[in-house]
Image (cartoon, rainbow over all chains, first blue to last red; front, side, top):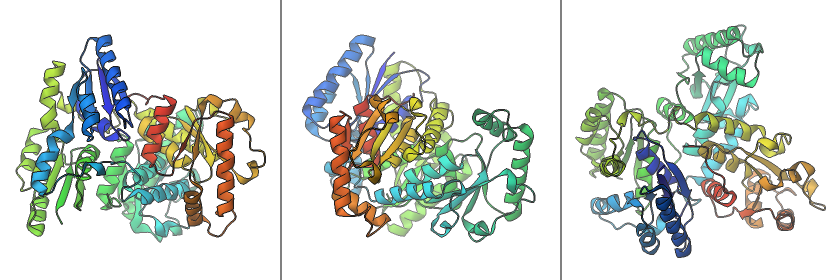
Length: 269
Length: 269
């Protein structure tokens, strides 16, 4: 199997996203190697050796995705027996022309603590944790959005992703079996109605997820799942709460859709 | 101020990472617009209009980062008055030659529920939450790594990021003031000693963070912070637990370093 390398002097997250976006277009498998923090010439030489060994092992030219800006490290990596894909190389000089200013390669620490939004993202993570699953309902005035929905409809992972990726403070509140007789919005949610965003999910998928957690319980029964979903969807419509069916969407997609539908903007770049 | 657009028929996360990596090289500010889920020609025309409006407003050519593979949508976006940066365009055909197979653009949903690792990443998030902050110490046999450290040294956000980004199951356990007399490893950690990874932080930075949480408390005092850090670092050294000073690192960097130092591999791509 052919090897794919994602290498950088930082986290290598950018190289991974870049390489993965490209390789996902090809219906074939690769062995993936992510190598972050290649900050010295010694480390670069080790990496080069590793790439060359993979070439020997597989007989197939390794694919190397990197974003090095240091010319000496870059030269070492570029001299390996893999084929190099470096998007900075292709795009920096057209961008310099367009912007009329030279690039400052030293600033290239995309995923570091020095990005503007960093502290805000960590605050947002702490906010999401402190306001997860209805555990506290008194801080909703600080929320950017309050996700509501039944248990296991995707609220918690989406809240966390909104925090980590976008710096958005997302609380979440669960509607439980006890709420289902005459389901209505509790006062503490009504006060912040404009911040509410509903999640729903196909009852069959909900059942599968709940069975994984508590099989053969009332909680995971077909009847219960159908009833809860019916009730919350009725509530969303009655109260005009925007909502999303999460069945076929990843956390990334759910979060991006929430951003789009609510018009929320990421907290700075 | 010049506008930068990140557009896609999916989450636009790839476009954001790509564009942000490039723009972070330039010491200038932009207005950022992320527009996900541009899946129809109508939506594409709206986006084109928005780009053209930004050109009129600012008098500066907007920068447009996109990853469209649908030729009709792409044609509309490419005909706007912004300047287009599309890395797929540059790299797909060299990759096709290298791999000897044609790209299958329909597979381009990098951040969707269809990626191999999806369920595992959600399981890992649930694991991190259930095993956060020592809340449960009986599931450590399922952990890939157990982060240890004093309160506010970065354990929780790092555990969540390891889960969401890499599908790694990270528990975390806090050493508190009560543990500090004769600090030693509790039995339930000793049993899983090979999984332990220690976090530490400069006492001054710890103090600042704790003051933000509980100012003028013993918890946030210089003396307490210094003492706790001294004790945990002594423990790490005595027990030969690998550890990292998180003071100057982002959650992404801490996570990437943990992956690197422990030799853990991401759960599939």
